[in-house]
Image (cartoon, rainbow, N blue to C red):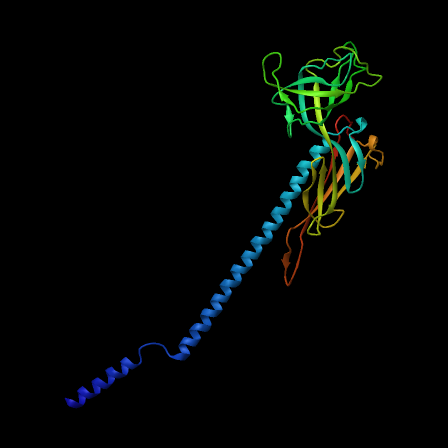
Length: 299
């Protein structure tokens, strides 16, 4: 009995001593865990880089769409025959950009002195990117002789004072502009040549051109009386935005008054580099379109 009891005790002690893992088992487990963790981290890093690259491409495409909304809208409002194109180059365009459209509810008193006249416009304006300001330039519709259309057209005007609120004769809201009007022959300075209901365009001279920013990269800049600001970019180079000018026959022209369509080519560059295997580079996307100017025949 003593022998059996001794053997049983030794066996139990041996079993207690073998509970747990050996050093080799722990090392194998750690190696396997490291391999698994490394694989998971690679997947996470790859997914993160892919998401970042995709975000870069989306941002780039959104900028291109913005350019396709802003520039064609400006160009469609131009009438080359009226001198709306002031200067044009391969990578720059200076224009009279329309900023407001309003209707006259109290017409200026013409037939005498054409300075310090007042025009009351219906408010809110028919269309406006901003309110009228002192020193704004205008086009005012000249009706002239109502029995003929031969003398109809636009006459220039300049706002010479800060606009103020003033109701129209029918009691509706309006805004009063103090202006100097230029009625030049063959148009005649007679009474009521600018009647109630005439449209008024407000515009400013702006230049779209490519140039480098403070970071040394290329952008499309908008220069106006308010200053210069980037509106598109970054671009891959100075030709990131290119203009081509076509006449009524579809031939390229260098004469501003002969322009009937303007071709617009935009190449946008990603903000950051995108990895391609072991290397990285900026992504580039492009858009090309052709815009017809107003009051001009299509071809």
